[in-house]
Length: 61
Length: 261
Picture 1 (cartoon, rainbow over the protein chains, first blue to last red):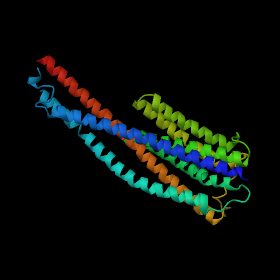
Picture 2: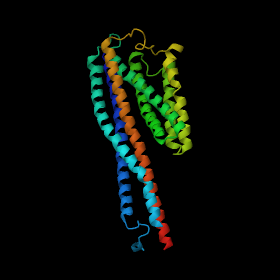
Picture 3: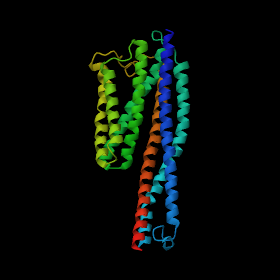
Picture 4: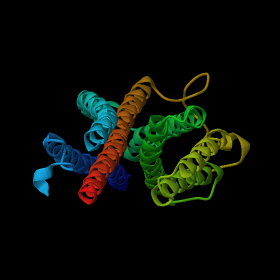
């Protein structure tokens, strides 16, 4: 049954492609969200570091 | 006044630090689990493709069995975890249980798809058809649709408590299909073979059984690794949401103080 090797190869290839595709998809999401978290944290830290916060600093008037 | 409001809101942001620590710890775990998973997958490939003997009648196509049975068992595990986490969520209303249920359902759907695809390719090689509407295959496809529906509800229904509760109910009810799938080959006449492993004397030689167990371990580690990664996405999304809310509060404060002056 020489054709059977083709089916075996197809099954294994499809399975690992699906796993790898999902792994890349989730990895990309984690990377993007971590960047968002860092950017937002920096933004908040900058604002909180200003005297009385960005909100009530009279020099901003 | 503005100072006190700001301090109070900064204090509200403290739980985010906890979430970040938890997410980082999960990341550390995921790294080690990822290494273990790669080793297990390599072992599985060796056992399934080289170590296990070639079956006499089916030839090389029989080796699809190792990914097929591994994906079948782990599909059940993933959906049972979803159902248990959903029960816990409905009972305790803990956000992390809802996130776990959603993560496990998504990875479960991926492995369920692998189960259907590998079965279809194996069926074409052995039965001469990609698909047959027999009880085992159809009930497995129904399971796929139930959890696809669950994930579609989560994706398009909005991020509200009511949607989370409705999805939890689907997550629990969907799991009831598992015993039907399991017993389908006994209850109905099907093309799919009856169990050959879970019975008094397995119809498989020891080498095939060993390869099968290694495949199950590899699939379980893959499931665990991907679910943890997906769970991290949920946690990070929550953190981003809270930080954005925090930034909006600060913008409101700034606007309020500007008007006051």
